[in-house]
Figure (cartoon, rainbow, N blue to C red):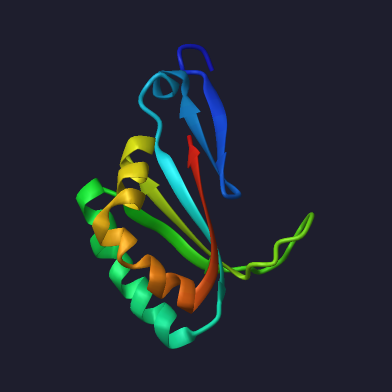
Length: 121
C-alpha cells in the first residue's frame, strides 16, 4: 500500500511481530529468555515469586511463562520457559548484576537448571 511504512518481521522466542522502519531506528528492547528444568517445585515457587520485585526497578515485564508443547526441530531439554522484556540491553545487564537479583541466584540454582540468554530486538 502506497504511503504506509515499510514493515519487517521481528522474531523473539518464536513470536513474530512486525516493526516499521521508523521503529528499527529506535532503541531496541532486550529480552531475557530463561529455559528451565525444575528440580524442586517448592523452591522454584519461592524463587519465581520474588523475581518480579527484582525486575520492577528496570521497567521490565514478564512477557510470558510457559510449558513446552512440542519440539518442532532440533532438541530442547528444558520443558519450561520465561521471557522478560527490558527497555534496553543495559537495563537487562544491570538487573542481572543487581544485588537484589544476585541474592536470588543460590535459590534458583537449588530449585532448577536454568539457561539464561539475552537478545536485542
